Image 1 (cartoon, rainbow over the protein chains, first blue to last red):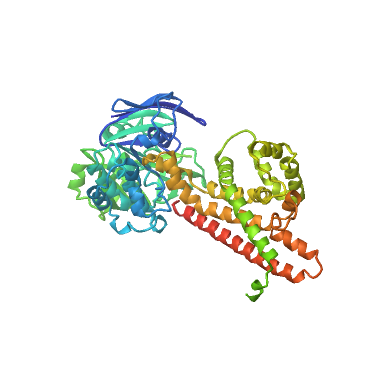
Image 2: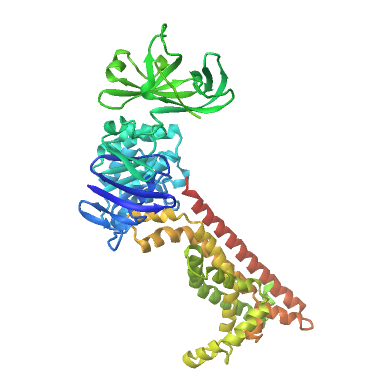
Length: 354
Length: 236
């Protein structure tokens, strides 16, 4: 069990966080600037807190005073956002780097297991600059794993990658989660990664822990998640007000096409940001006829992921945008929702940010 | 290469002496330059700008000034020179070791600059990564930092050596122009140009000087470029 209770002044950010992480994947979730990466650096020993303490299984690693275990004695594997492979070493030597200093004899079985799990056996004799971003990140994960860590720290391992690479690595991360006994601390601001990997979420905002617990408990607390943190679940679009109809509705043009919303104080030509929360999106397999909702869009189901035991998160491709909808597994089954299915999306309400 | 065979014993002696002086100067400067380069690239201390300026000074001062300062300080009656003579029996003035000292001082700014650039080019997070993988500071230096800056160190060394081969003003001011003791290649060329009928010999030595210097500068460039390639690779 890792226990963190630290305070650190980082420029304007006053970081003051306490949380615990046990077996499984603990996700530090929050937007950029909320202190996630600094927290990870302190756990790794790359940064020291001003006050507080960090301990693992009752072994004090840093009490912010005299007691300090330097990074190389902590045995925490760290996967950086941009991989940071050693450019002068082959992939094999990169993977072997940690073992050289642990004084452990080579363990070909562990080596084989890790390269098989990460699918990097074909890359072993290459130099890092000949690898794609996704391959680099997989090697970085392998390098951290093979240093035989008692804790694995992953700092937004997918953030620097495009969607295709993200999709390529995600299955490996899911295998990592299933096959690794060491607790994993995973930093991200992507809801998609949270829904696929989290056993526990620590929600950070402006250097404070605002919620912590099981994903379904934290994610359903609307007060804990603000719109940008829930960016995966609440779709956001930049829109332009095309015109205002006499009946008080504004015609908004965005990646989804045309959306109608109460004009309130909008004027034609204004730029606004639309937010559509997953709970406000309904799915119909046939075109709804008599319906009070104004915004009915054609879409295709892209992915379906479990949000909680009862609720599924459905990702919908709609014109040039993406929407998310929360539906019960029962409804998903009844409607035979599957990736590729053409559906109609009913947007119950739209939040506007000017 | 038949003209090489025409080199007189004095000319050969000047070439041999130049190589000995330059190699000694470059080797002796290497650890000092590396330490200074690290201090300037990574250190945070009072007087850093002053130190930077002092190291750079020999590059912009007239060499004769540097030589004269050396003579005042390291001459037999100079404060440092007298101390070395009395306590260690080391005399630098008018000896080949003095020539090496002059060359070392003149080559130092070039060496430090080249090495400093290489060190500043290293992504320090690579060192942090090595730490998280269990490498202590020394191991990180040996297995990560040093391999990444190695071409820069070598490039700086070669450049310092080339500078020493060409050093003239400070050397002749500090240790004069004594054949067989302090008459290096440039000093020998200078003497020959002052001697009636010395033109052919001067031209021969000039050719050798150009070849050695050009080779060294090319080698230095090549190594610096290789260092940049190595470093550039790891950053996605």
